[in-house]
Structure formats: C-alpha cells, structure tokens
Length: 86
Image (cartoon, rainbow, N blue to C red):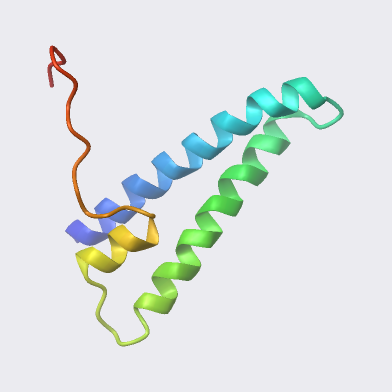
C-alpha cells in the first residue's frame, strides 16, 4: 500500500510540474486553451512514467529503486535549504 501511495503522490507532482511549465508556453504561443495544453503535458508525462513502471513490473515485483528510476530519480532525497523548516 505504501508503494501505491508513493506512486500516486509522485504522479500528481509530476502532472503538476509538467502542466505548470506548459502554461507559460501556451500563454506566449497562444491559440491553444491553457487548460488543454496543461492537461496534455501532464497526461503525457504520466503516460511515460506509467510505461516505465509497467516494463519494470513485468517480473511481478516492483522495487523502490525501479519506482525511483521510472520517475527519473536516483533514490536520494532532495536536501533541504538552510533555514527552511518542515
């Protein structure tokens, strides 16, 4: 269950990160409604990760390292900036 929660949270973050990046571009280029461009960017990013997760789970076992690799991570936590609180 923890793996599923981790994947769901990371997919949401991935969607938002890609959608927010495209919103600026679509505002500059124009012609495409911003919400459509953001949705397309987010869903495309999620589909790419879902494909990697599916390939990694063919053996029936999905490890934490495989999940991290699918998201393009190296398994290390991002260090906190000095002075930031949790």
